[in-house]
Image (cartoon, rainbow, N blue to C red; front, top):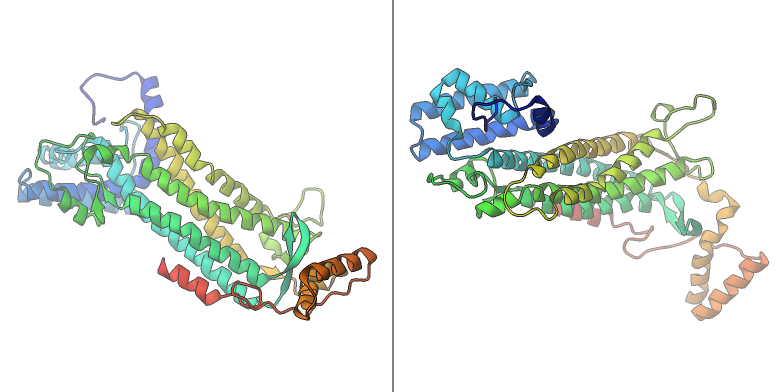
Length: 425
């Protein structure tokens, strides 16, 4: 069954090419099509296009379909083009002419749009929740290991003292920035496009404010052409939010891979979180973190993929837009998987408490030693020159009893202030 079927057949090759993997993706989205169909049916009853009995009958059957979806028993056979055609087929099969009325005053275009908006709202909320879980863990680890020093690097050269408290909480605060983008994407998704029909509205007196409230949207996308132009745009906003998180996770994963190597030996994990080599029995490979790095780098390409699909399309619907679904849906699943596996793995991190005992890290303290001279009255440029000469001559003696007290430094992490930032989100 196809909603646009006019009674003649389509060549099977064309059918396969145009449908693509929509059926598989629609198994994830069918829940939201049912939610929108229930709101639409209630609205049709409210404006007199359905009787009370017809509205009630549709609601009962839609609830039954929702249960089937929730139980994992909903299928979209090859004879159906997508979730919309399968759901309408069930309604017609159960209710006859009443089922045929469900499509009154809507198009498959706004069906797809509203289902995607509802889906993205829920997924963005889940991503936000998973990000918050990782944020909480990072702040906990920062507090737990705040006094353990860690080399800081610039240009991958030993630079200044850092700490595990700084390292963990740096990624926590970065996640706050990332969630600003997620919040913006949610704002874009939280607009009801239902009622825009094929992109130019309807001659039926639909009540779009009613369906907006019924589905829990903050507002509606008022202009019907703007609503249709939102397809691809809402997915792109979501992709930018995920790309921001992915950039943070990729950098964290890279740090972990470096810090786990024998050359650094800053951190380790239980054997079950690493993998071995087929020929080297000593190996403990950071495969989990390497895959997080790679997956998150792929996620950062999603906004560009979507741009290339939707760029320069004129207003109105175009079949190109079908492809945004197969880009964004798997990306969302990858994003959640990366957040979950990092949170799971980092709970078991082990930090090396004696990293800076190695003499090769003595130069980390050159700036603090220089600063002590300045505090004792030596002009900065003279103190800098003195330090340089001692380092060159091999007579440098580091000042290891450092005291960093300003906001955000290793002696004053401002963890509660960082937490308050997240709480405001």
